[in-house]
Length: 440
Image (cartoon, rainbow, N blue to C red; front, side):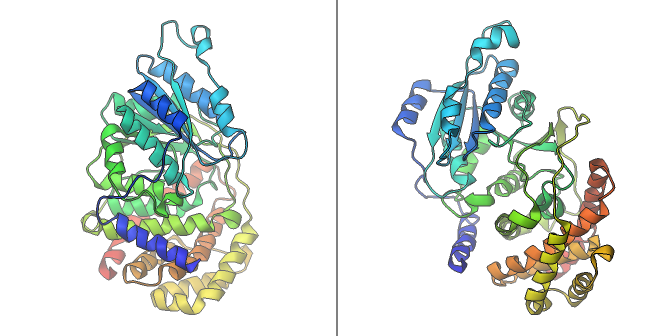
């Protein structure tokens, strides 16, 4: 485990320092190569990374094809399913689906270019990054003006997502479109507690879902990503989305957001299954702070981006969480890492967390300012060369504690009001940024 994590950290160091000269890490199979060759060129490529998604992928493909036919009928489009070795019927289902015979009666009355399909298995490091590289390479080969990426486990995708993710690129000239979802208040806790507020405070852009999973990319940005050394590294497992977003924000690309409505997918209880993802996402965020240090030090406030789409009242599915388990993991983790935490945290921060760890569940409260200083203390320790694996292992249970406190704070309020609390937390990340700057 330690050796693997060391490789992960070293790969981060390598990829943020210079463009890649690596060989491609994936190779299309012969059938897919012939398909791409036959297509020749395209205006739009929609990529769907997948792995054992037979329950949901049919809905995703149908929504994409309806959206392409309805909103971009004069564009030549390609749908690419980049599959990570599914053992179920995911790939077969994609190959069987086509809605174009129904277009005259369902959607439109004029001819359209049917979206071509390419179904391929990617090879290389397991993880979303390998799948995305395959998609971006095909987009580049076809000369696509715009590329859209959507997750295969979506159950709430509609044809309008195609318009909102591709329209700003093809019509308005943006390079990167990120989603704004209506999500349950307990869905996306890594985003809500760390990635969104920290990215916003550092880089000055209020990008609500920086690791949302569904994006639109211009040809210029697609080619820029392909030149970078991210591919073939461990970042490709879970860190790829935040890497893409941070690069787009900091390297001169036009960024906007689009309302997509509810995101209904396969959510995870943070107490049960998010720790490996947590370590790699947060490790990537901290390493990106090294890469873009000169930029974020000059930013003293955040600004909204342009936003497209219509914000409607929707009600996402509830996410079940285990409050008792979160608190137990927090207390056990604090006890286990107590001596180490006393070294990497400021004394005031450490004492504050120790006090929280002593509280019973009916009194449990992890204050926002304490949480912000905790994240900044960990980022500073990362910067100063603390052992990365141990540092992130020690942070994970503290994250469980803050998440538990957020659940208690929002127990009796609707998701909209919970969102207001997340915004207040973001404001505190910005207000306390001098604390980070002074100690960096």
